[in-house]
Length: 376
Image 1 (cartoon, rainbow, N blue to C red):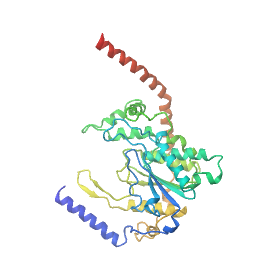
Image 2 (cartoon, rainbow, N blue to C red; image 1 turned 90 degrees about the horizontal axis):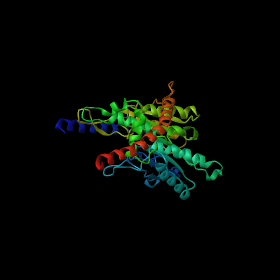
Image 3 (cartoon, one colour; image 1 turned 135 degrees about the vertical axis):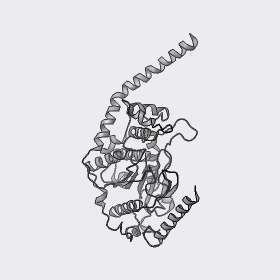
Image 4 (cartoon, rainbow, N blue to C red; image 1 turned 45 degrees about the horizontal axis):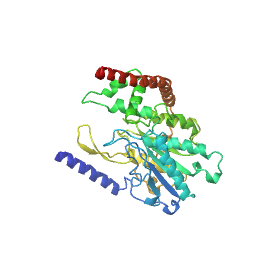
């Protein structure tokens, strides 16, 4: 890094610090902590094992203590030394650790409530788990039900399906030098089915025609406030997939679903100001009102639903944040993005049996030719 770039970075840090002293940025404040003791928080990371590390110090949540925040370990990607992964993009393998954690929590703390923050793959895991728990609650006594004990859900970078995640990642990030071969593959006929099936070499537990988040949205209880935050420039998960989840939940009667957007080219960590590398390689500090605006919205939503929040954040003197309305994060969309992905998933399931048959015939055929060539 050049001396000039270093000085510019330090200058920007100084400006941010100066603003904080003047009350332009959020300060650290506790808020009615004695009333928050019965609220616990579960953090569900993404497939890299990251996501949600900063939800406390960024003032996204206001826990009673560090012991009230628990991070759940779910299957991750095969990095750095393994060649395959147990991750399944929110299917059964990812759900089991979360279901176990939730049930164990209420066994130990039956009179508490939980809020959940999930990132990327964790969002699919969370929604699929909610659908399962809602089914299990049927026929139970009210005191034994789990869904009423869930306060709110924050979905950071929401996954509408594993297939869309794989396709979007490959077509946007796979490059060889200056050659975007991911986009070239994505332009081929039946590329969505091809890419999803090829991914099984890395994710053998994942089923392209198995359970997807898009399948269970009708089973998500409409009583739970759900906050979705997603970058419009996300290269891993499609933004219109997040819109599809939001619109479908809203159409199903959830009046407490919210969509917060970001204009930064990030996948997770959308709620913190961080230092990144610019397109020319020099570091620069992201200082804007987008992060503060979205944290303000989240605290406003928590206040509306009688959940722990930071009062001082809602008392900010920043003029850009004083006239915000929750109506702005409950937009109406004319285009039905949900139907788009529902159609794509249907196409994958229709052709999947033929792919399976082709692969099952290809393996013995390859073995035959191998034997023929090497053994005569």
